[in-house]
Length: 168
Image (cartoon, rainbow, N blue to C red; front, top):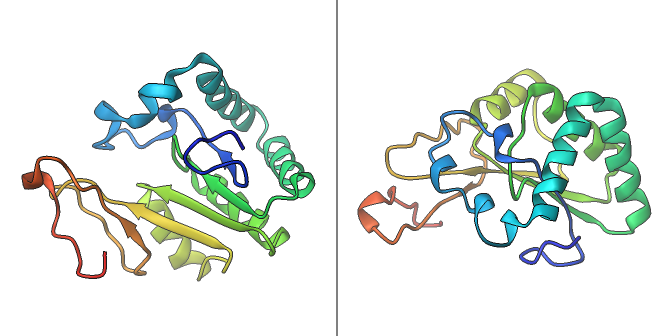
């Protein structure tokens, strides 16, 4: 709840950038490696979350559930740093959403194939889960057969920009 951008009324769960896809075009200039996110306590939280997830996924999501339940907050953002690491993690997010229907969840991701595969196999995502695909430059492809929302980067060097949809 100490994320300066989202404010104190939103729970934020993040991982270090090692959870991101290897070919992510933003890894070289990742904002999660700059400014306040370089503070040791912030990095320690990212790596603690990553370690807890990798050591015991059941316990990790149990802790997340109880943090949500007892915080009284109704909005959770996944990944102001890092990304959805696996199908299993996504499945557990969906289960968490189903278990807490009065909580709104959002996650920005470049794990397009993982999300598209999940929807293809399981159908729609829960209504309280907003997955937003993160675009990058005009070279980076965003496969989006299910028309999920897309966040675009508006680069200082406009030549890098993809063609923005009229409703972006």
